Structures are given as C-alpha cells and as structure tokens.
Image (tube, rainbow, N blue to C red):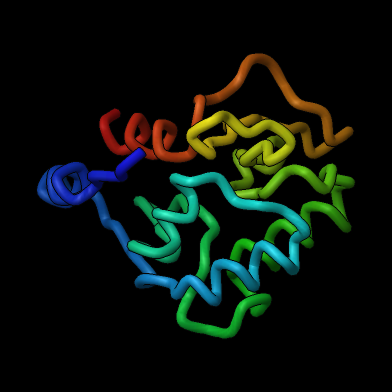
Length: 149
C-alpha cells in the first residue's frame, strides 16, 4: 500500500484542521522501535513512520516516532509500553491512540496479510480484549478514512 496523504492533509488544513507532523523517522529508528516492542510493524505503519513520524490532528494524537531518541516520552514505544504495563494490553498490539480514556486503537501484529498489512483493532482498556469487528484492514486504510471524514 502506498500512503498518499498529501492531498488529504492539505484538504484538512484548508478546512481549518490543525495538523502537526513530527517528521520522517529513519529505517534504523523504526527497526529499533520494533525490537523494543517485540513486534513487526505493518507495511503502511512503517511507511507512515518513514514519511511522517507521528501525527496530531485537531488535538487527537496518533503515536509514532519523533526526532527524540526511541523510547522517550510521547512515542509509540513509550505509549505501547504504558498501555501494556498499566492496562494489560496484550503484547501483540501496538497502541496508537487512547479513545475517550477507555479504548485503545491498535495495530494487531498477530495477524499479517500477504502484503504485510495488519488489521486495526479497538481494544478495551478494562480487560485488554478486542472490541467488535476490525476497525480497518490496515493502518493506512484507517488513517485515509479518518482524514476523509
């Protein structure tokens, strides 16, 4: 999957949305984050990290990597480790967002399609269980739908 977010980002900004992008992460930083979390990121999430790093849209943050060293406050490693330690998030999930304080938006790395994509899941902060159907078939699909709404 090729993330073509430029036009969607521009359209959102023209409509008055405030979008903050941390900046591209190197392949080395991406691999370090994977090793620290013990997972392989999905194809579109790696692409997102390598092009954008992390993103905040109108105050809603999607965890990624920043110019700071991997594992420092605010990145996907710190956020996922926090979710694992404080809420019992299973290790195969990568936490990207905490919705309304009770549901994590996660990449489910226990599932991987032939194209390297993993589905997005909503996971309960109460018991670490997946809630309902798949939120999107990939991070790229989820983000494109979010920016299109």
